[in-house]
Image 1 (spheres, rainbow, N blue to C red):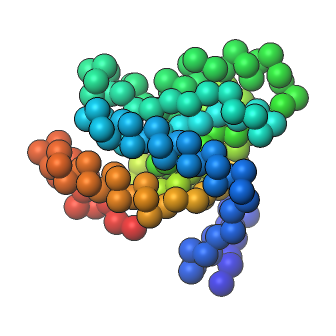
Image 2 (cartoon, one colour; image 1 turned 45 degrees about the vertical axis):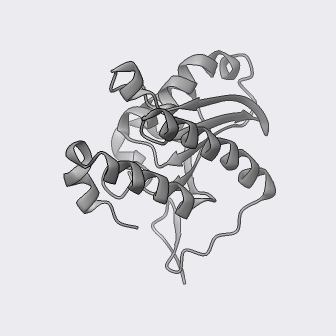
Length: 179
């Protein structure tokens, strides 16, 4: 069953169709998330494309860098946003393995990302359900389209495993983080 809230279309059975391009780019982001996991960082990977061309890959490095702002999306956008400025008519898409937080969504708005495709929803801190009309004209005008993408289970399992291994830090969050 599909229903809409005027900004998004939701499916109660969570059966989505994804293009081969979306699967390919999300697979790259998922591989980067696995790299993050192997080095001890929160397993979140991100990929930026312009006109379906790969422009950059980034991973979460908050633990490694001892910097809470070193999220995958922030690190990636700060390295490649100049490419979007150089191609203002290009369609930019941000693929990420976890639904972006407020900070990463804000950076996406400022960088003029057109679409954010995420694998695993974040019901606690994700921004896909925000009504951008409450954020002022400029933010609403530049607000990206959010879309749930492929590899939801794989991304969720990586995150859950990481949180369980680091329960001292993630315990309260983990209790509330459900599929």
